Length: 178
Image 1: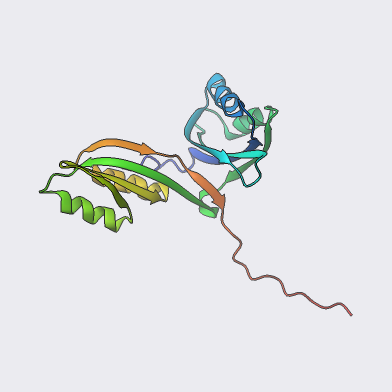
Image 2 (image 1 turned 180 degrees about the vertical axis):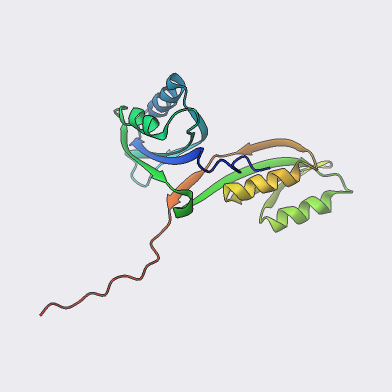
């Protein structure tokens, strides 16, 4: 079953814009460790502006209230901005690499599921396949659960990345002022 089923209020996605400097990630991780805050998922990379990096952190609010987590993060000198993304109003994706047992007798079943979920087979062995799948975290959870029946040999997930959904409302008409 999905790791997030029934825990919509438990996990919150924070986007933290930080200065792109050595040691910043260690300071953020250290803050979480010192305060006993649990990180469910963490992804980090530079932004289009090389001065900044973007951390997408999914936090477990059962370990600490969200307000306390954000207050502590803002105390770090290298934190520029913190935004909470609502799952209903954001686009979230994750990448998974998985090696699964797939002997000749069951290989076609695995391939069919890979195709249904839009994944790709990136390596083939006599008794196993390595699969890559990118998509919504919930879809990856579902795929992972189905693959357990075949036997997961190795599994690696990147952690969630997210952006706010774009505004789909029609732009306001520009009126000419006379």
